[in-house]
Image 1 (spheres, rainbow, N blue to C red):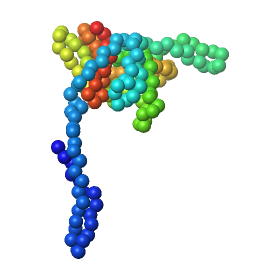
Image 2: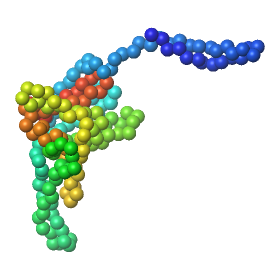
Image 3: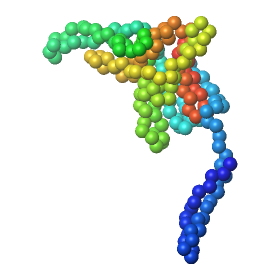
Image 4: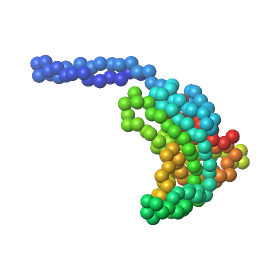
Length: 191
């Protein structure tokens, strides 16, 4: 296969004389997965053989529930504080019944990559990931529709609450799958 383009056009005796260059192409299908790497909960996934360089991704803990109760101190004054609670729930205006997947983990972006850094796990999942789960020996995939729910009163670091389909609570197996060109990274949350 060749790609042909016009490099420049010369005018000789009022006639156009284009100079064309042909370049031989050897296209590769990057949609076909050539390699799969699997990681377990608590392991550090390093994407060193992908287009993302040395990005590191690690999830230490995960849970899936209908809601989460977070404890914080409500302070009336600097010296007067009371224990209080905030409930984190999925958005009620969804088309489907939703649950919340809680993830605690960290991500380290490769500084040598010349794109805007992705510094949190939610953004990385939302851009590159899909949730693959198995219920009754049927594999299902949630590719889109991830929404992060942020607590209002409780400030958390490295904790993420992400809306997932309610049926994921019944899943026998759960994994986050990242397809980066022709390499698939599978981060297993539940076996």
